[in-house]
Length: 77
Image (cartoon, rainbow, N blue to C red):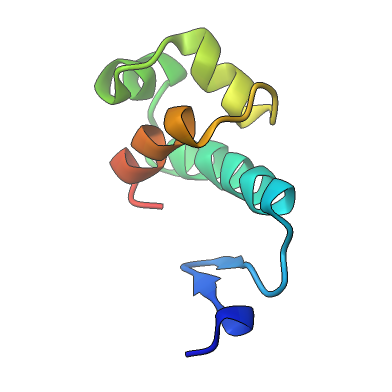
């Protein structure tokens, strides 16, 4: 597999910039949370982050790999 052809599940990351990757992850985070019928409070509690942090992540604000890694792992993204 070549790096430029990297695909993460349903996210096409071909030649994406880091900020684009984070935005795609944030969008996918919300979609996956809703598809699993979980509230922000449930995901935040299980991920060990605040509800406000999760809300910011889903909205694409205050992006940090440290904060997004646990919710994405929890939801199998």
